[in-house]
Length: 418
Image (cartoon, rainbow, N blue to C red; front, top):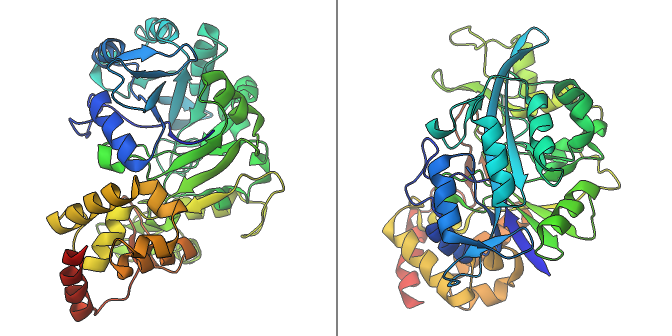
């Protein structure tokens, strides 16, 4: 069966997360989005694990569902951890996502980790031992766990990050490199960028939302055609099975907040080539620029842009539906007008991914503004105006040109007809 999975999220016990990040709310939002399988996030946190055990029941296949069964959403046990350590003379900061098949395995993992860090301090705990030792610990508990380096290219806290990462999986994980089957590309990179590195040809490229609030679920995700079964999903990921891992759903990487180089405090946005001309220095304050993902990919790539490996899993790029509606209306995505139209479209069509990926433009036009349908069409075709993100600032995407005040007013009035 075909289904959409978002494995990497956080609970309300992680810093800077919504109080709504708990399983009932997550389950409801997953249905709105069209996500069938959702990572729990944060299983290392004692209070959240107690909630998970209280509210979820095992399905006998390594997955879980709400005990009241009012939702079709399935859950898979996941957590992200942060290893900060010195290796090869540099400070390293690496985030990894851990998959586990049962509460029993999670309890054993937490028992091992609790003496090495404060699990109760944050949903994403910090450890000070090398990340390769994490692999040893986790797989020592169960060979059915999976460890995936998270948001692999962000400048901080990632395996390839410019400020604290490594140049290869082997350099990072040493003898445990053979146990790394997948990396998460992150919001500021996409598979096409990663295809430029031949060393990643046998690695399965995964995409997840890293959501801190329910509305952000599915901003990146994975589309499978296999059984909703933990062991089968892991086998698909480990073998990079293109027949069962159909494609990833991607942010436009330019929208990610570390795509280009720059200094937000100085208002400086810089392409990799411009940065190199300026010797990595900010032209305003003359301090080092924050080197972004595109620059880092350029440094490590051994292929030209546009190369497609023969075993690559394809991707589809999206803009979340509220942002498309907001662009048409000339409003912010969190305004009442956008929210009302979003709810109407979900009620009419079923879920967000069905609208963004599957329905014909004609069908969409029949029950909403033709301009919104046109916006979805332009997103599917990649016909967009983008200012890349940099130094922690998200990029800005415009579907339609500026200076459309009268047109926006007309569209706002017309939406009352649907």
